[in-house]
Image (cartoon, rainbow, N blue to C red; front, side):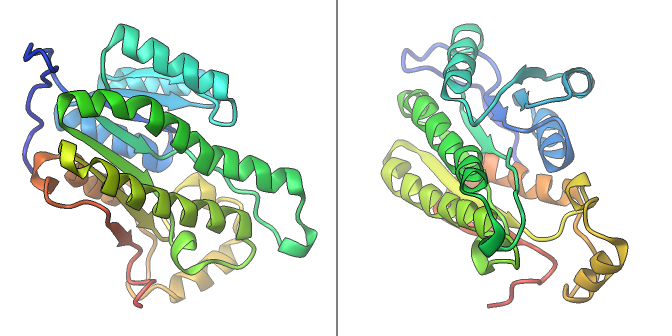
Length: 255
């Protein structure tokens, strides 16, 4: 995989390694992505919602910086954008990884849960992308990478909120790809299946084993496997790939 070249502003001034922002980069898939991008030579900023000490510890370990971000709060997003642009410059790689669920049957669901999931999983990425895209356009280079989900492609029982938000994120990313391709910016989605993270801790072991039997490869995915795919999309090697939804689910989705 090719290493990222140095970032160049519109003035032509070399400013150092490309800057990558990974939301929810403090745990699970996000932590693996942040580590992978750092290994590839990016300067990484990761965000967290809670667990400040653990997030800062992980950031220090991989040579990144960590900042709090609440995607349900527009002012929090604006504050992060200002701080990053003032202290680091333009972001070249934006990874929408942070997300949340409020699983449950639709008939028993609450409207406020629906609103919160859409705010975090869909509106938050919209606001971040809109704010950071201008810097990518100025530099004629950028990557927008959205972590969607198999649930956003085929749906899952009890995940109407989550599936709708992730399906919307896929459509949003495809539209962004069309708008910014002429500036050398790509936008792609990654749709993981069942990945071995603490998000699966709430699933009873017997039910999790039953899920594994529905996966052709008969195992859960690993965060580092998803990170490898994201690392490829962030690299110069993926310059001709945009508007795609790449499934990494052990064969769960075959249609």
